[in-house]
Image 1: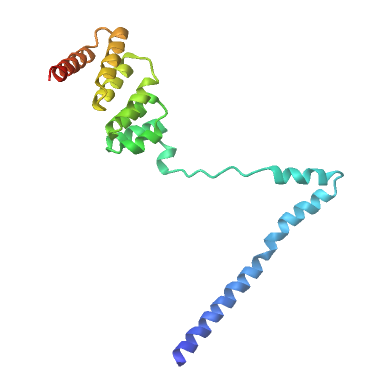
Image 2 (image 1 turned 180 degrees about the vertical axis):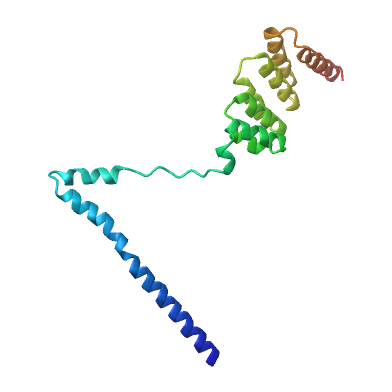
Length: 174
């Protein structure tokens, strides 16, 4: 029982010491009061007081060490290289790169939507690939046709289109 009483007495002494230190720090509260007193010497200062309450602090944003050295698209590319495509989508602002990341993540419908935002041969080609992987074969053929209209020498789109057309013919024959 004696050691327990000694431990309790030591804890009580530590708590009292901490409380005394906190009481000694109370002079910091005088700074805002001094500011108000300084403003009280001016005419019309009470009209400015509501403005202080209308000012809202800006929300805090967490930054990582890489934010200092790499742009968000560079961070997204690095995440793609590390095989973390879902995290990479959040860093990219370009819909083509977002589509690439979604495609690698296996979200083919989301990738097709992102690729559809851009009107270029490569975007239509990639949209066709995403649609084909999602099982929308006829929509994929349409996307590859659009890619070939913009860039007729795009052989990969022509090959994919021919391959999927053969697959559709075989399915219809069965």
